[in-house]
Length: 232
Image (cartoon, rainbow, N blue to C red; front, side, top):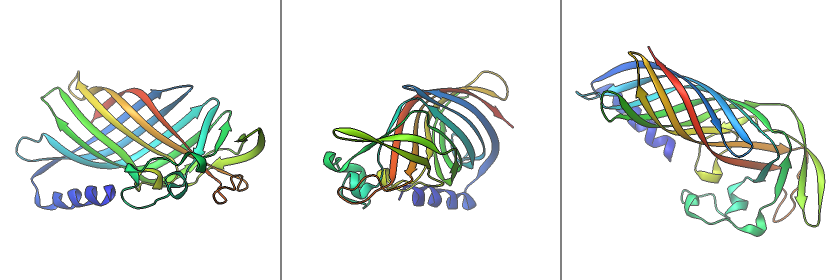
């Protein structure tokens, strides 16, 4: 649903007056024993007579790393019992959710992103970007499947396919930012952001058995991010 809205906006560019600009973002984020470094490059189309609103597309590489991170059951049909468009409003079902503890997760992703931004004035811009589709890679690692009263050792690898859907229907590793940019030089911006980042691991076997076999586990991280932006 979210992707189709963005696509509709982009199609409208063919009939709108716009200016095309290119930007590159280098961003670092930090959270609770975890963080990311990302490099983003894309084009924005500034629309209208005042060029305040812009829509953009591009590619983003994100490298995620953490220490002792808990990965929860990922599929929406297990976490909320639903996969429909309203899944974002459904509450979790605690008895359906298990956890895998991964001591040193490290996931790299390359995704196509979508960007929306608005210029508050000549110096300050606010915006939102989100990964839509791509792939991830990283090493196989040991983890612990936490099931009462003991934990069982397991092997896990990053999910390779990333796809933006709706809430827990999402697949793989996806990055998104709600950001603010400040123009401090002719083509340079300072950037601050709230970054919401998903990573997903798949266990070697379906370690979770209730309410059905499952091998997909997800970490959701809300982090503070800062970076620098170069406009071309």
